[in-house]
Image 1 (tube, one colour):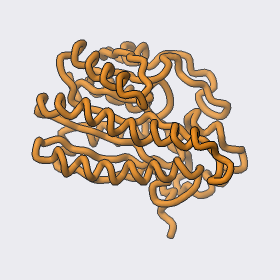
Image 2 (cartoon, rainbow, N blue to C red):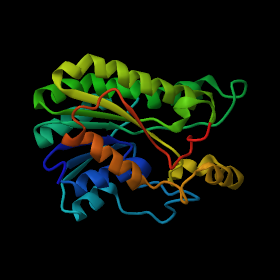
Image 3 (cartoon, rainbow, N blue to C red):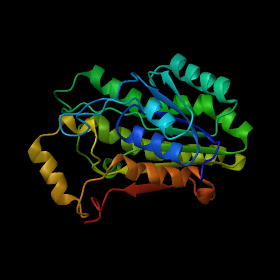
Amino acid sequence: MKLKDRVAIVTGASSGIGRGIALEFAKEGAKVVVADLQEKPKRGKYYDRDLATPTVTAIEELGAEGLFVQTDVAREDEVRNLVDRTVARFGKLEIVVNNAGINVPGTSETMPVADWDRVLSVNLRALFLTSKFAIPHLRAAHYGRMIHIASVHFRGGSSGPPYAASKAAVVNLARDTALEVGRDGITVNVICPGFIETPIQDYMTPAEIEAARQRTVMPRFGLPRDIGRAAVFLASDDAEWITGASLVVDGGYIAAI
């Protein structure tokens, strides 16, 4: 097992990509803390329409240990509590996956300022908060892996002004943090998914989904486990000399010039 007895936090892990990462970590022997606003999985109108089993239950069914901590990742006090409860339960913290993210469609003219602020708070500010409180524990564990989940939209626009902007910022934040903690043996990397079948796609129309299907080179859309396997690699000993990097996992979505 690549992550046997490692202790990991995965934010936004009740559903979607975060759930996929948490389950792949559990299969590799990790103890996984699921951080989310709600424990109940989200059901989408296109994907995961019948999902009902909480992530921690699914983790335990795999024979691993899990813990749910209700967390609004944009709130400083709740992120501090998340880290504190993790260390209190498992005695250490070694892996942090910043997956929680939201999108509010709109334009620069129509979007309320409050929506812009909320997207940036969840998609970017939260990563600063988890880094702030987790890094001392990663350093103490002598095994630190931090993974941010961005998007193929880090390379260009689409999906609304705060989403693309936040995902581009995530990539550069990871580079900056990698420089900050590299001497401590802590790695900081980014995964940039393409279209993944999760409830976050509910805002899209069937025509937009078909357009994404046509642009994706591989013969299927991505699944949460595809991002989960990439995260396992970056969290493992196999990636101990990779830091400040961005791994695109998109089925060829952005391969065309």
